Length: 311
Image 1 (spheres, rainbow, N blue to C red):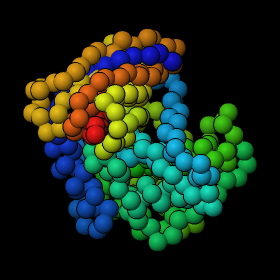
Image 2 (image 1 turned 135 degrees about the vertical axis):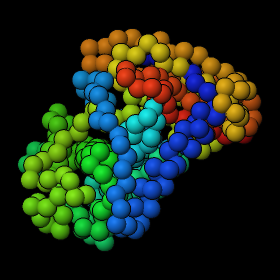
Image 3 (image 1 turned 180 degrees about the vertical axis):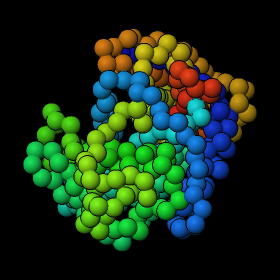
Image 4 (image 1 turned 45 degrees about the horizontal axis):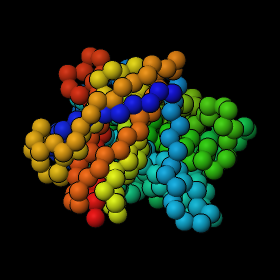
């Protein structure tokens, strides 16, 4: 894996949120109701930028409990497309990690308001592991919105698959050397279609093409730091040479009031997966950290942003 250091601009995040709001609002309303119309996202299938899937490790909780830290995956719109992002979540020691993580994904909201879920809270959800690495998820039909178009339905399925695999691996329930199969049942059946467009007669696997080309993994959104040193890290997919980061005061217009910025130098790797880590000294206040890159064929940059408070 390669190492980098990067920068973008402030209000780009808020601009990105505004771009995401029409779709996100429609999808979230679809997740709480079942209108007759179809949400048409018009999203192209993303291209695969890496030949392996980066395993994101959840940030340590800082407590001596026995809870399992898993990555829960969400959808975020950026660069004219919609990709998967993840946030760490703690699963109780007595809980089934896969079921608990999927409940968070379906019934709760992400910490970062730029993200959303395409699922609805189900009244029944169960998961089991069979063989070396087969994860079976059985969920009630009320988890599925009836107005997702096929392109968003693909992302919803990958959201479930990535979350289930993350939880199973973090808890040691599946062989870490094998890529798990994920079987989805709706009320115990596989002869129906998820979201009205995805057949369930075959198993599913994680598809790296749906991961965001750039993700900030540390810190999480709305992090509060007691010192003026902001250390951040993340993952970039593809042999990118145009990755950058920037920090601006929260609420600043795009491109204005940049406090610090830098480009990230990417080292090409065989699997086109790289990690970045950098730090910046900041005064007390609330700030927006944004990491930006471009994707071949996309008319807009792809970015991930976090709000941080320095006390």
